[in-house]
Length: 493
Length: 140
Image (cartoon, rainbow over all chains, first blue to last red; front, side, top):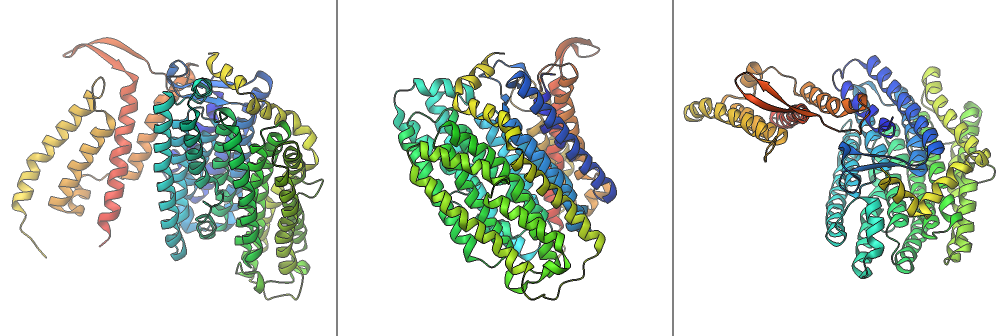
C-alpha cells in the first residue's frame, strides 16, 4: 500500500465532494461528515503506526522519479500532526451539531470543513514547496468560505481584511518560490536540502529564507505580522473559530519548522537568531493582548499568538531538546486551543455575550463546566503534570543549552501571564455574584460539553502520559535535526 | 428598460455554436498540445454567458436546466476518481494509463486516462464559473 499516506488527504476530499450533492439533508450531512472525519482519523492512525514501524513513507505522484514529480513525504513529525488535525476536526464536527445552526448547515458548512481538513493534511504531508503553496491555497479557500459563512455584519467586514492579507501573502509566497527556483533550480524539498549546501553565495539564500519567514509568518501570526488575526478570528462562530485557532496558524508554524530545519540552514547565525528574536517578541505582544482584553474570545485568541512564539523559539535553537519540545508543544497547543475555544464557547452561549465583565457565578449552576475549564486553563499554562508542561520544559531546556538563554527566561516569566489570562476567565465567569443567564436546554448543553470534556481528557492523557509519546516525538525530532534521513527516504525510490 | 437586441440575439445564435465547437476542439487538443479541460471549460462557460447576455438568465435556465453546484461536484468526483483509480492498481497516485486502439472512423487512436481526468476538470470549471456568474448576476 504505497498510497497509504495519501488517504488522510483523499478521504475528506472525496467525502466533501459527495456532501456537495445534497446540501439540504441535514441528518445525512451530519452523519457523513462525522463518519468521514472518523475514517480520516483511523487512516491517519494507521499511517502513524506504519511510519513508526517502517520509517518515512514516500510517494511521488504520477510515478515520475523523485526530483521531477511531486513527492509526498510522511515522516513521524508530519504523521503526528496529521493525526492531531484529524482528531480535532472530528471533535469540531461533533461540537458543530448543537452550535452552528441549521441555516449554516444547509449551506455547505460540512463540505467546507472537510475541504479545510484536506488542505491542512496535505500541507503537513507534502514534500514539495510549490505543492505546499497549492495545499495552503486549498485550505485558504475553505477558510474564506468558513469565515464569511452565515454572512453576519461583523463577519463580512473582517473577511475583507482576512482575504486581503492572505492574498497578499500568497502572492509573496509565489514570488518567494520563484526566487528560490531561480537560484536552486528545484522545488522538491529533499532536492533543495541537497542543492542548497552546494551553493556558495549564501547571501541571496539568506534573503530568500527571510522572505519565506515573512510569508509563513503571515499565516503563523508572528510579530509584527499578526495584526490581522485577533479581529478576523473574532468574527466567525465558535466551532469555526476553534477550527481556525487550532489548525490554521499551525500550518504556518509547521512550514517554518520544516523549511528552517531541512534546508534554510546555511546561515544559522543570522536566520535562526532572527527567528528567536521574533519568537520572543511574538510572545510579548501576545501577552499584552491577552491581558488587555475583557473578551473571552480575544483572550484565547491572543494566547494562540503566545503559543506560536513559544513553539518557534524552540525550533530556532536547533538542538535536540528545543526541537522535541516544539513538536510536543505544537501538538499540545492544537488540542488545548480547540478545547478552550469549545469551553469558552459554552460560557459565551450561557451568558449570551463574550464580555467578561457581564459574567459571574457559574460555579453553582454549571460546576462540571467550571472544573473542566480550570483543567484546560492549567494545561494551557503548563502546570505539571498537564500537557503544556513537558513541551515547555524541553523548549526552556533547549533555550538554556542554545545561544539565546534569555529567551528561556522570558518564556518562564510569560507562563505566569498565560496562567493569569486564562484563570482570569475562570475568576470572572465562575466566581463572584451570579449573573442572569440565558436559558439553555440540558440536551444542547450536554451535546456541547461532552466533546469538550473528551478533548480535555485527551490533553490530560497527553500530558500525564508524555513518556509514552516520547519515542514518537524523539523520532520526529531526529528527522528534523538530520536532514539526511529525509533526503535518503525521498531518493530511495 | 427594454432595449432592442435583435442584432445581439441573431449573432449569438450563430456564434454560440462556433464557440462551443471551438471549446471541444481545444479540449481534445489539450492531449498533446496547449489546451485541455480548463480552457475548454472556460470557453464553454463563455458561450453560456453570451447566451445569458442576449436572452436573459431565466431563458437560459429554462433551456439548460443544470444545477451547476452538482455539476462541479460530479466533475470533482470524476477527476479524483480517475486519479484514485491508481490506488486500486497499487501504483503511485495520479499514475495514468494509455494505449493505442483501432477505432472505426478514427483509425489508430491513442486513448489516455488523462482524458477522463480532463473531463472532470472541464465539468468543474464550467460548474464553478457558472455558479459564480449566476450568483452575481441574480443580485438585482
